[in-house]
Length: 323
Ligand SMILES: CC(C)(COP(=O)(O)OP(=O)(O)OC[C@H]1O[C@@H](n2cnc3c(N)ncnc32)[C@H](O)[C@@H]1OP(=O)(O)O)[C@@H](O)C(=O)NCCC(=O)NCCS
Image (cartoon, rainbow, N blue to C red; front, side):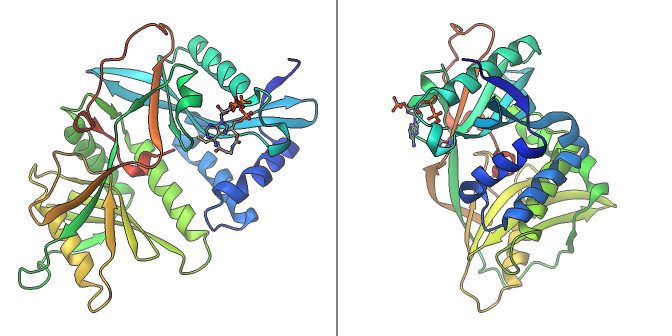
């Protein structure tokens, strides 16, 4: 094929944004969808680890995708991982091998750039990606019920989180993932990127559609528990959370405080991609289902390398890190 892979900029980027906005706009106007993308690229992590590429035939965009340079700890070793997101072929060009071609070229480039694995979330039946040697990673979403029966909200100061909390959050994140077999290596810049991304997603949406809260509990001027929660249509998604206390008791109390702020209203449905080992005593898991999008992974250099089977309980992956 005479096709070329190019970074998206100018007219190509405008085309890709117009093509993908109806599917992934998530309530944002076309202009704000573009603003959210440009702003993500301006964050310190985004500048270095995120771009969008297109397979073009002259002026025609045949397919496009986002590319993330991630760091993952897999069976005790830190690996650089290519994350692929938002694969899109305009309807007129579908079924001609364009997505396969773009993915193959991205995988080849990743090998030369020293990445060891590739990961993606499949929103379609995984067979397409299985043909490219990706295998599913089990990942579950839990619906949580919070015990509110213990004499009102706990007397605990919960404040908005900000930049100064990130070192403590990165520490909590690392401690929580210590025993997992597959876990993202989340440094401060990456955590900041994800919180910024969610805030943009909420802040640029029409008023009242979605809110994102970043809350912490501190002790001795240091964050000791935190959570990032997105609320939409009566549903809370706990994007990420942590607690220095292994039992997660402060995190549970934070959720009780948050619920006490909504007296009389219908209780929200609370979901999260909770690590199995972090269920605070105030919470009960009411349901566990596989995540709607399927996380998939493949080794890059040695395609024959069998991946040791993983169980959901061995994976720590927050919804915040969904790409
Ligand atoms: C999925 C998509 C990227 C495929 O692009 P494409 O250029 O047509 O892909 P290719 O020609 O390389 O491969 C076609 C194969 O894709 C797979 N495929 C396409 N759409 C699919 C879907 N909705 N569900 C499952 N598999 C699908 C099929 O295996 C198909 O093979 P077939 O033509 O023999 O049936 C394209 O349909 C698209 O942009 N869809 C909307 C966005 C989307 O869902 N992206 C995937 C996010 S994970």
